[in-house]
Image (tube, rainbow, N blue to C red; front, top):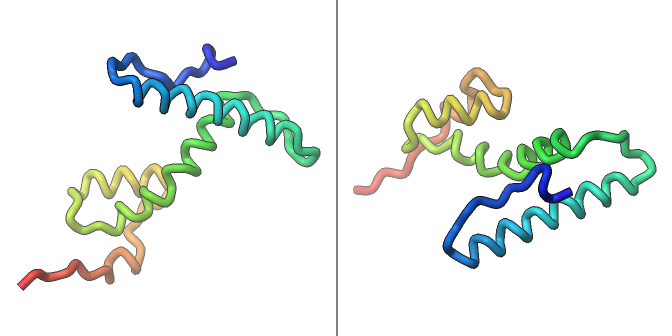
Length: 100
């Protein structure tokens, strides 16, 4: 099951290899737990992994959208990823700290 959708990359650093293996195992376990729930509709592993990845990166992406120090292209891609095409009022009103 791990060989079909493997997140591991070739690396010479053993901590990174261990991290990728733990990520593979935890994704398989999460799919098994969700499949064991009685109210869970059957979904294939690729869709489950995509949904899981989007749920994991959502908080960081929302925080990065509000960061005015990032280039507009990165903030635009973050909004596009989250499905927010327009700039919200909270993004316009966020003040960056001034170091004086």
